[in-house]
Amino acid sequence: MSKFLKFTLVTGFALSATATAIWAGEYGLGRPALPEEIAAWDVKVMPDGRGLPEGSGDVWTGDEVFGEHCAVCHGDFAEGIGNWPKLAGGADTLDRDDPLKTVGSYWPHLSTVFDYVNRSMPFGNAQSLTPDEVYAIVAYILYSNNLVDDDFELSHENFMDVELPNAGGFIVDDRAVTEYAIWHGEPCMENCKEKVEITMHATVLDVTPDEGGAAEEASAADPVQVAEAAPEPAAEPEVAPAAEVAAIDPALIAAGEKVFKKCSACHQVGEGATNRVGPVLNGVMGRAAGAVEGFKYSDALQTMATDGLVWTDETLTAFLANPRGFMKGTKMSFAGLKKDEDLAAISAYLSSFSQ
Image 1: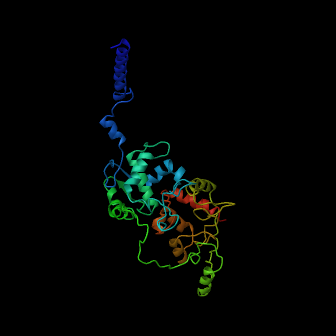
Image 2: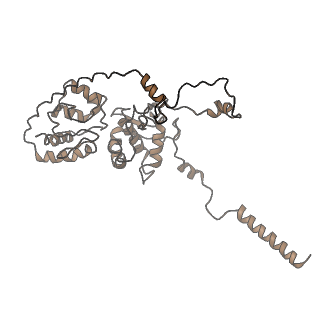
Image 3: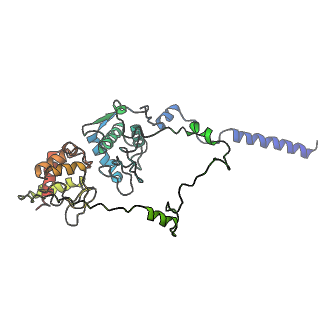
């Protein structure tokens, strides 16, 4: 054997051994994850409750935590700001072309809500919330969707008792089992049916431009539709005369202006105010409920307006203290004001726009 051949064989074996060591061995990067590290990373919560941490949180605490960590994107009342997702509403929209898919209308499992908040929120600071804070936020989201009362507390113990409205709205995709056998064979390309019958022409179906012919014949054959008489316009609600407002403590008005920040996401007051998520509140004191022109009120409010509800210091305070307790079915997702001094201040502030 020549020296050159020996050198080639030896070099080849050496390179092969080196390559095998490199590719079969470690790259010098990382190490196997420890069981406790995997456990810390695995924070998933399953629909049957597996993975839920111990803890609890109530609606009122959720209101505060949500306002601090979530409201900048999702709004104070989970109504969404700009293009950020709405988390509440949409209960009757799933049959529309553009449904509003929220926790209250679309999501099937509450575990998904908890898992997502716990895993990914708040935006830019994921997994910084304690389990109690996550429970509180989820409780507030449930409240914002009219699914629980304002005294509700969510915990790992009662979590599985909460059933979302669309829990039965999903089906298992079993087409691979039920339909694959039907469609996997060779497709029929000719003489697939014994008889073919033309039931309609495309021009009649208005899927081609009208050029006379069948479309005109179809139009001529249609019976003349007689327009129904327009219904009588509904009588305008009688607006109660504005209540005479006594001089109000300026300090109380100033305090009310601060409290009103909780309302400003949906309502406006003052010059240039317009309807937003909620109606303009200029002149609300002494005004009949549901009387702001151009605003679409909830059925609940319209019913109480028909019954003669007028916004006074007494009725407005009762409403703002417990919106859903005062008016079952209200669209306003605000949890309410807990402090008497805040109620007095907001009443004074709104009264100042009724003078």
